[in-house]
Image (cartoon, rainbow over all chains, first blue to last red; front, side):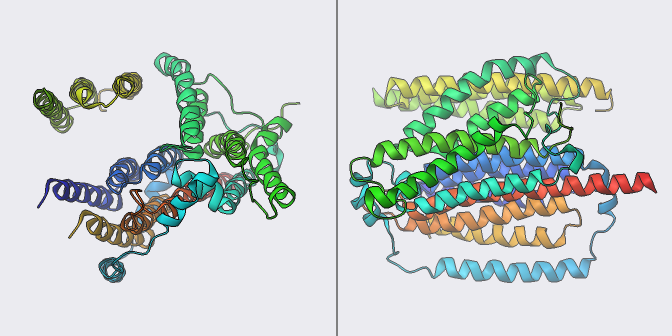
Length: 315
Length: 97
Length: 100
């Protein structure tokens, strides 16, 4: 057994241990804490699978932002936890479900062991046209050039989720600000962190977006960092969540997808097909689309964490 | 020369791992929140510092070494703030926490 | 057995564990957490396929990796919507209990 295989075995044991802990924990808070640790361990697994862009995304969104969301929900749903704990299903039911899930796992494991060898891959084709797109990172090229339609639809899905969250506000609060994210007791050290960290975080986020063209990185990872800095300032009480009915809020949210769509439609005139980039202009167009998308995605992710309106519009 | 650097890396990272282990043992064995916090933050800050120190010779460019140190400083900032928050919440919750 | 195959088997177990959690937990927030576990396992499966397609100087096939990145972001937005629904449901139930 080589050293690399031993490290992989250790990682698998840790990941499975955290997953079992998350499922088997009695109360919700340990389960959510276990889930955040599980996300971080998965980041290491993604690095072992030679996918640094995915590792960054998993650490930022999968572990970080989802963890913030779930922790906030845990504290606000604590009252219902006790009543739900009494409804645990019976042991025979759980045994049958465990048996069926084991069957499903076995089927997927069989598929993994029977994967074709040599593995079919699109890597050579992706690499062959990389010089045309102007970017050096193949994953960024796939996201913004080869499968740009998927990224356009994804930004639309993010906006749809935000609209879904907003629609949960009572009618009298529509257009108002979400409930304040600030902690109940104002804390000096959190205020200090909220003042010192965001400048560093914003520079890091923009750097990751910029460097994603040629090295691991990209706009989703960078936008998540910028959104996290915004959420941090809101949690420290240094800023209030904006009123959701304001025009500038909605403009920022829509700007990315709208610019992307406009670039796609312009592709009809400039290059002959939807979302086709004119030769020689691919790199500047991709950078511009990434910039607009970063702003919108950061705002969307921050507002998804903030939640629906909880106060009436201040007239 | 590279052998000495590799040996330094192994020694420093192992020492850092020992500190992390000590912090984890403290987390499990200490009686209440404040003492557990103490064990965690002391061990993790020194442990991470030793790991970063050990990885510095392995950096290909000076900029990578600077990034490692910046990562360590950011973790210090974040963990310091989080320890303060947890400690104040524990003190507010009373001696039962 | 290579490390990649090991991660593939790990992904299979994670999918089973997540599915068990989604079905069995009475509290909906736990089901959301288990659903995220299940999703991460499925993404890991994609990652294994991507790693096996390593060629042309790249560490892995970039297309499945891009799909996973999209998937992680969409899973987060689904979780945010689910959490919003849960909190609203609790608020409505609390208001009904207060009126009773």
